Amino acid sequence: MNDPLAPLVDLPGVRDAADRARDALAEVHRHKTNRRGWPVTAAEAAVRAARSSAALEGAATELPADGRVEDPVLAGSLRVGQSLDGDALRNLVGVWQRAPLQALARLHLQAAADLVADEQSLGRPRADAGVAERLDLLGQTVLGSQAPAPVIAAVVHGDLITGQPFGTADGVVARAASRLVAVASGFDARGLGVPEVFWMRRRAAYLDAAAGFASGQPDAVGAWVIQCCDAFVDGAREAMSIADAAG
Image 1: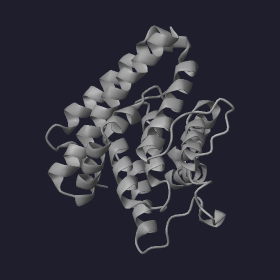
Image 2: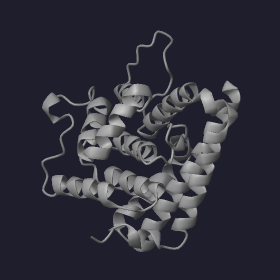
Image 3: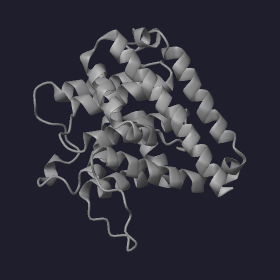
Image 4: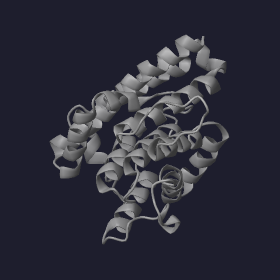
């Protein structure tokens, strides 16, 4: 069976960008604080990722002192963050490796719980023609591709944010799914990186790059993947700052 992502890996700059991302996160995992104290730094990374992801959707990011989060987007993003940390993450990784679409449904259930009136739509793709088929193809690609993990993460991210299969909270789900790929593949096995901060600080460039991915033009798709890899590199720097502070 041909790997549908193989041509993407061969685009100019993609393989080198993926290698840089791998090297950056490998260094984070070698940080002295992360040898034993990684559960603390991973938890902080999950919160920063959730807040940054919510900010990209225009939501508030301040965490109230009483812990009662009223913004529905932030609340959903934080729930997603909790599902990407600790025991919940290990469980979700197992689901992702067996049935990616079930894992995506769980992420949407967490992200959109306060955003939809009809609970029956939570975790379910839109009924529009082709949506379910596209999701199924994405799941098959995830399970079958031998492409470098940063490339797979970029493709999952791009496909979900542009295809908007659920119709609500797709951006939050897309970024969470990218993190899930990174953890499940071992590329960022402990979930220490925070690439979401990179995108939050470059929202316009992020949306432009995603639109390029949606165009299907090879140069634009390659540019999206490279920018996603750059986000992982920047997220590794953010992770280093978390580890330094925790140490």
